[in-house]
Image (cartoon, rainbow, N blue to C red; front, side, top):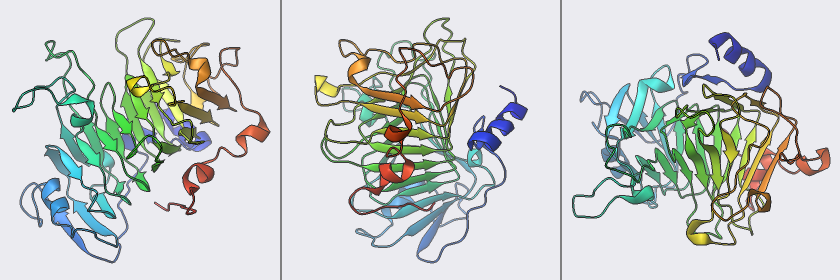
Length: 352
């Protein structure tokens, strides 16, 4: 898809991120309150993201801003539960100018023995509630081709396990399991708002039991070189007690993969949990030709028809209406909005 087409999509469906770059310059606005700066060249308060996070006061009750100078920052970052209300803000003109990355996968050996596992592979783990990221890139740069000996190739860029999280004008880069949207426990909801973001990957690259609203984002499936199966966009594991899983509103689903070679999703049941009845709702979005007439897939013995997969008012060459593509009615979709997904019991309404 060329840039002219993507600009048209941004105008018509709100998909403002193209090929991982912002539609224009986006210098974040200044905010009052405590802050620190990170710069790899030593010109800031810290040279690493983790050092800046560790310096935030425990139990921080108000927003604490960490400004990050342009550059690439290697190494895992953990936002612990006792460091809430952090704003991590890239100070470049575009999100690709600030990159936070690591390169370990599920099967990467740990120094003390064993392997990292899927959760342990995350470049960034967010356990602190009220976290916000803006105008930067999170990546997992694990090279599958360079490590044929590693068969556990799940490599997470960001793992979230906290509530009331915001990502604004952020890129998430990886292959398998790029963005892991989780919660503290199966029956505990955790809400995530993603606005004007770009997410790329191949197998199950947006997954988990979190409640996430993707608002005007671009979701890009990588070409794995197959003519028939280039992966799955979503793998939700939403608890049956949670009415809200993954919502994509006014998004653009793009790919360079062959036509009808990518699936929209499959239902993940962690540890074979029968109560993980995943939900993916895609509404008012543009779908490319990489998505075919049967875009939902079973996951092992778990049939996709038992999950909560549905579409509404989509368009584009991949927006086919078939017996294998459940469509919502206007009455049904009225309660499936970004506002409804995020409100919870406290009426949360994020303002990135």
